[in-house]
Length: 277
Ligand code: IDC
Image 1 (spheres, rainbow, N blue to C red):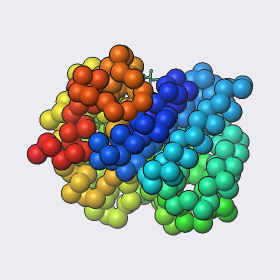
Image 2 (image 1 turned 135 degrees about the horizontal axis):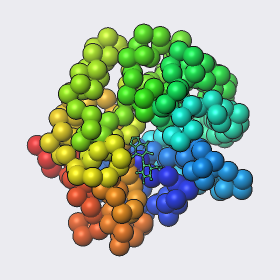
Image 3 (image 1 turned 90 degrees about the vertical axis):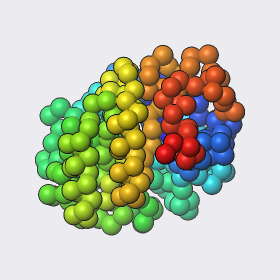
Image 4 (image 1 turned 45 degrees about the vertical axis):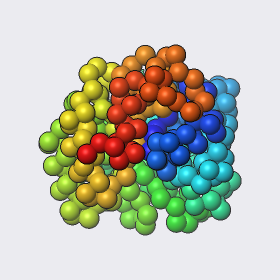
């Protein structure tokens, strides 16, 4: 599937025409709704309710279109998910209560812990507080948990896993930055039974910009297909950066043509359609 950019910055891309095109023309079955959760990233004051309303709008569209939807608590600038833990608990309690009857929803409770945020003493305890809140309302939905170092250190989760069912761990890669060594880690962890979900990857470098490396992207996606691991591409927007699927001139409303797409958007659409061997 595709991941949105921050829905607070690119709200127009949360619409039925766009998601329908992703389903029918891009051959995808999941949309990830990225809601940034740092105050410095716009999740503050009255904007919080606005962004949460956009999440609900995106979920409703995915339910209507019979697609999966990943509700991504997109922690990034805050480094540790503990910073907004109280809001996370309130938000996931509300969403899981409202949508308990819909198997479409996948919860992603912390996009990319980074910096000082470590697994054993920070991310795992956060997950141990947030997961029961969701489980109380929605007993068996899939919950994705981010891992240290911008969701690269899945090995930390392998050494000290969570004791809940239906939990998966996030592995994120940017193809021009993360190559053989991180693929090796993915392979090792999966072979040892760790359930992983690549809820975000880019064809370019980790800045979200710079040159695409489709050769490395293909190595990654071939491996993930072999392992049976799902993935979402960053990002569904028309920002002036190479990871944005669309040119700034493109509309947000779907029915896109080649002319609307950046190289990454064009490549990833072909990949999803099985047109790249
Ligand atoms: C990037 C966006 C960029 C934005 C920046 C800061 O592409 O437009 O200015 O965030 O908010 C991630 C993050 C994701 C990043 C992306 C590229 O999950 O939010 O988006 N990236 O840097 N992890 C690794 C790379």
